[in-house]
Structure formats: structure tokens, C-alpha cells
Amino acid sequence: MIAFEHVGKRYGGRFEALANIDFRVQRGEMVFLTGHSGAGKSSLLRLIMRLERPSRGKVRVAGHDIAGLHASQVPFYRRQIGVVFQDHQLLFDRDVFANVALPLEIQGAEPREIARRTRAALDKVGLLHREKALPIELSGGEQQRVGIARAVVNKPSLLLADEPTGNLDPQLSADIMTLFEDFNRIGTTVLIASHDLALIARLRHRVLRLRDGRLVGDQEAT
Amino acid sequence: MSERENAKAARSASPRGARSQRTVMRSRFSAWARHHRAMCLDSAGRLIRTPVASLLTMLAIAIALILPTALWLSLDGARLLDAELDESATLTAYLDSDVDEGEAMRVAEALGASPDVEAVRLITAAEGMAEFQQALGLEDALDRLETNPLPASIVVSPEDASPEAMRSLATQLEAVGGVDEVRLDLAWLERLKRLAELGRRVTLALGVLFGLGVLLVVGNTIRLAVESRRQEIEVVTLIGATHGFVRRPFLYSGAWYGLGGGLLAWVLLALGRQWLSAPATALAESYGASFTMPGLDGAGSATLLVSSTLLGLLGAWMAVSRHLADIRPR
Image 1 (spheres, chains in turn orange, yellow):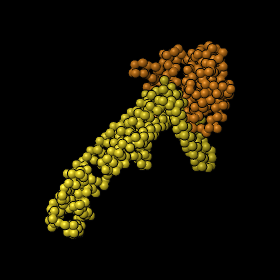
Image 2 (cartoon, chains in turn blue, red; image 1 turned 90 degrees about the vertical axis):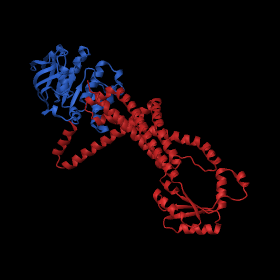
Image 3 (spheres, chains in turn purple, cyan; image 1 turned 30 degrees about the horizontal axis):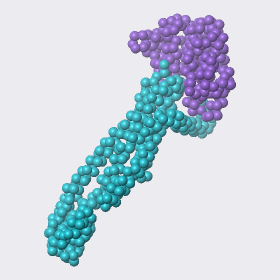
Image 4 (tube, chains in turn green, yellow; image 1 turned 180 degrees about the vertical axis):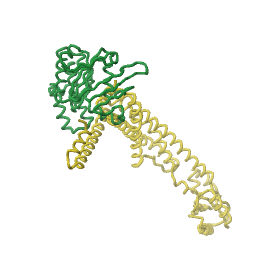
């Protein structure tokens, strides 16, 4: 599903964010990406989302070298990827339903289809009863679950998460991870960047370890 | 699965591939039309939710539109833009003062028979006097004259109103018996034409300048709108919105601002016309002339509204294209 082939990324010619990254993630896998802050986790995710292009090497997603995508194809490529952000990136001027429905609106789905799938996604994260609420009225954990619902509402084949439990207490973090495992179980490839090592260790999935922009560990699922 | 993959799957799975592809195209089109409708209403709603700010922007646009439009209208009113200006090009043949009315009529007929002459109009000495009195308002003074000092005259409209043709016609007419002198006011005509050309160019220059002003007003307003929705733009770009999708609401806002400004300009022009009409007509009447205040007709109103809407759209397009490039998701 994801293949990094000797990928390097430099910013401004000097700073080397990633160097010689080489790994593969199979379709349907669930993988954690760890490392201290600044190790290159976010840069790696940005490469997959094609917010950046690699300075060296190739990034392949679903078999395509995504550096070769034309600018006009990039939006369609991104629609296949669900992304969960640490700061959830919800829009505060509209309610929970509208936030979750956004990817479907962008794809131009039928209104009835939008309502059905949005409610299904909200139900999955246990927030169907809050669909009319504004994000500001929700707790941090609830906001993150809205963010997850938005990421999965269009059934992406790949789900990326950047520190999804960064601001949550251990119990909420565990709940969120369980949600990701549920999506993985129905076939979604999941890649989660996190530095919550205790939680990751408990979940026994494959772990990619980054240090100073280099891949220093690839621990198989146990 | 993406729309494309969906479409591909539908095509390969179904033996009636063409039909299902057509269905996909139709549903895409209806989604596109739905988004247009939604953004059209949404951007109008945003304008209405901030009525004072929207009205001020529209007023700025209206003021920029009023000046060139008003200038255009006054030129039009003064018939300076009239293509029929040439029709007022005439020659006047003054007859010898001893020619009586009957002979004057015969001369007029003779002149009218020339192939270069389109029409003639005889002004007898008495008619000339009456016109003169009316034009100058000197009735009392002229009444004291015992004899009419004015000669009869014949106003000749030429077939060809070009200066060369008129000059040669004048020489030709001067040779006719009974004609004392032929006057052609080419200088006046040429001056008027130059004035009209000047007026046209000034109007055009002002139009371009103030049109640019409208672009800047709309552009600046849209720039602020883009800035205030920066986070939203970043988020929708991250989850796969096309440039068109992001641009659409702002383009509609620009078009609404333009249309609103155009309507406001139209209303202000109509009010101004109302306000100036009475004194202008009174002034014209005191000179014995009839005058109607020029106003925008149907075609003129449509031109004003369409061009103001297009200017708003263009201003928004420029602002959005310029600022979307700056906005890249973090």
C-alpha cells in the first residue's frame, strides 16, 4: 500500500528531515510510527499526503509514484486518504454533522448519501447524539472522535493519524486506539505517528522507529 | 474507494458500461450544479450577515461606477455621442437682398434639383427675422427697425457631408444666380467632432480607471475574506478539495458585490436624475429650448449591471488566485 524507496527530504538545502527511508506497508496493515519530536514523523506523513515531494527516492502509494501526480490530480489522490490530526482541524463555525460531512461534500455525494454515511461515521465513534453540537461545546476526546469520523466518512483505503492521542488522558487514548483497530479490522490500512510508547507497546502492532530522520527500527507485530 | 475507482468498477462490472458511465457523468454534473447553487446562496448569506460592511463595499463600487456612467450619459444627452451628428451638417446660401419671395422659391427649387443636394429649406426674410428675435430675445430692439435687414436664405443639406464634398458644393452653389454668399460652418462641425472624440476618450479613460478601482475594491474585500477563512481553506485542501471548489464561494461573493454595487449605482443615478431634472429643464426652458435629462434605458441598465457583476467576478478571481497560492496546509 505504501512503499518508501530510499527517500530523503531536505528543507532549504541544509536541514535533512529524512534520510534514506526505506520501508513497505502492506494493504490492511496497522503500523505505528514513533520517535522523539523532530525525528521526522510529520515529514514522513506529509510526504504520503503529498504536501511535500521527496528530495530523493520515491514514495509509492497503491502502486503509484505520487511525485508524478499532476497538481490537478492531487485532490483526487487525497480523497483516498483519511487523515486525523493532533489538533483535529475541525471547523468551528459549523456543527459536528457538517464537519464530518465535509469530505463527502467535496466529493459531490448525493445529499441523502451524505446524511446516511455521516450518521454512520458518527455512530461508529459514538457521537451520533451530538451531531447538532458545535465543536467548541465538545470535550477534547469528543473533538478528536469527530476528527476521526471525518477521516473515515468516505471509507478511505488508507488512514493516517498524526499524534491522535497527543492531548488525551490514557483512558481516552486507549479508546481512540481501539477505534483505529476497528477500522483496521475491516481492511483499512492504518499508519499512526505517536510517541506514546507505553500505549504502542501494549497494542502489539508493527512499529517503525525514527531517529534524526533515519529509520532505526522496524519491529514486527507480535 | 475514490469516485474514479467507483466509476471504473461500475464500467467493468456492467455489460452496459456506456450507460453507467453516463449515469456517473450525470451525477457528477448534478453534484457540481448543487455545489454552485449552495455556494451562490451561502455567499449571499455571508454578505447579508454583515450588512454594514457589505453595503460599504457596494457603495464604494457604486461610486466608482457612477462617475463614468454619468459622464457617458451627459455626453449622450448633449448628442455628442450621436452618430447622426453629420446630419446637422448643412450649408446656408444667403440670397441677394433684392430677391423677392417668389424668386427665392425658384432658386430654392433650382438648388434642390442638384444631384449633390439632399434637401433644401427656404427661410424667407420674415422667417429669418422671427428666428433671430426668438434666439436672441431682442424683440423690442428689432421691432424698432423699419425695414427687415435680413436676406432670405436657403438651408441646404448635402448628400455627402464630408468637408471636401461640402466645400466643392459651396463653390457650385455660389455660381447660381441670386445667391449672394454661401456659408458653411465646417470649423464648428469639426470642433464639435473633436469635442465629441475628446469626451469619448475621457469617458473611456475614466471608465477603465474606475473599473480598475472596482477590481481593487472587490479584490481587497475578497483578500480579507480569504484570510479570515484560511483555516477552512487549509482543511478542505487537505481532504481533497479542488481549486475550483475552494475558489467557488469567493467568486460568488465577488459577483454579488459587483451586482450589489451596480444596483446601488443604478438607484443613485436614478435619484440624481430625479433631483437634477427639474432645475435643468427650467434652465433649458428659460432659453426657450426643450430638454429632457438623459437617463439609463433598458440596454444601458443591463450593460451597467452586467459589467459591474463581471468586474466583481474578475476582482474576486484575481484576489483568490493570488492568495490561494500563499495558503499551503501546515
